[in-house]
Length: 194
Image 1 (tube, rainbow, N blue to C red):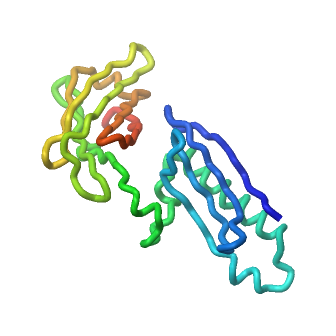
Image 2: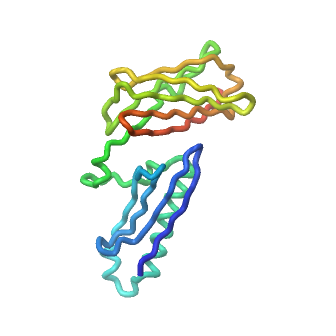
Image 3: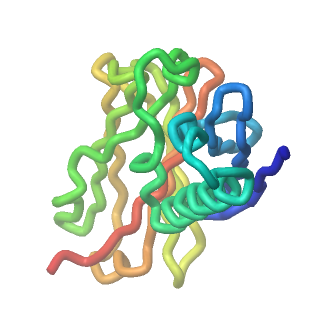
């Protein structure tokens, strides 16, 4: 029996397509996550040992796959998708270069009426120079503010713009990094310091 699940789920401004299926030949239950048609990660578990147990069949496989699919959907909604992806070496997916954006100064970004963000773009852990960053600062009481930057030789970039600290609660910054046809988007929520 061939079965699977497909679900679109939105987190921030990104729509994730989650596809889960039983891969009978490999005895795997696999969930893949796509953004704009590109696979960004997967989670797979083997059911080879379970298949040897009496009473294990399609209903049990379907239940395990349904639970794995639900787990990935919940991770997306919680903003913790990376935590559920497989990290296995030798996977074909690991050979695909993927961009990442890290927020270097998340603990201290607002001073003297300015919001300053230090970001670093990496690809498979290595710094990416000349990546184009587009920032969208959104807050409930004003139109969005956009700015751009390009990363330096160490993969770093800094943006700074004037904003009152009282405007930070309920605000967010969306950062999109582009480099040689690859794109990654991250959304960061802001809050007033305690």
